[in-house]
Image (cartoon, rainbow, N blue to C red; front, side, top):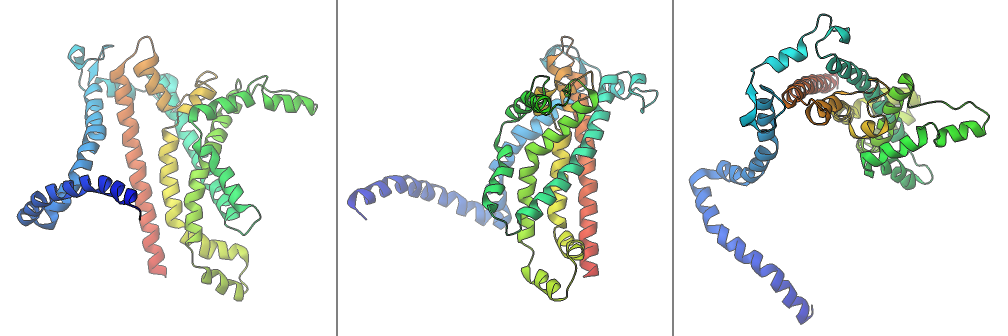
Length: 338
């Protein structure tokens, strides 16, 4: 190593050495007083403080807002109303008919979100699993195709929405291709069914690369000798998939299911750019409803938006706990069967 290299190394490492010596004595004193548990708490404290400031405090503030009314932003200018905002959201004669509810837009958004999550998560899991199975095979250009499927994940949701808006709008790329093929153009984003389907398709296209990588990692962790033993026994490919691949891929599928469910409920950016919630309220989802009620509407109501977000968060927590319970129960059953 040259003299210049040694000098630069000393300049970089010397402050770190001084810092380590400075904190060494107080850390040793703390360890003598509290033991290993105290040391773990001391190292976790900065992260917990950041978590408290940026997660727990906003959650508590959001709950406080949900108990107030008015259009003012400052809490000192708002009126305490208790659970009135929750009662307003839940006031409904028939929960299957949004028009009978006091906040019919909230229930329309909740219904749209429910069907969106069911269809989008199902498609996401199926498409990601099929893609991972294909990319796990020894095909030509495998590295290239892995990059291609992951590329949309790197795009901003706004860019994704704009790209697909240019493709699906009345004078967009898709209609241009259809006209050149002698077909009649369609108004994809002005038709309720097409627009709803487009939001699902675009969401799957934008996020499937991330879930495919998770499943691909799970597939590559399955021991190859299991497949070799199945091949020697002459086991059909379908039976190999159902009896070996799918059970061993279960933990990864559970992760994909939970993450895609949470992401599906939180859908906003690309749909807002793509359809703006229309036509009508056909693609109005809960997150957009909360945004418009809390910030975009002329008669904004931050308290009502906060109450809606609290209810949405509670539903997410319940769904996540149910899915984790089911996945752990499935893993336990699998271990007992083994």
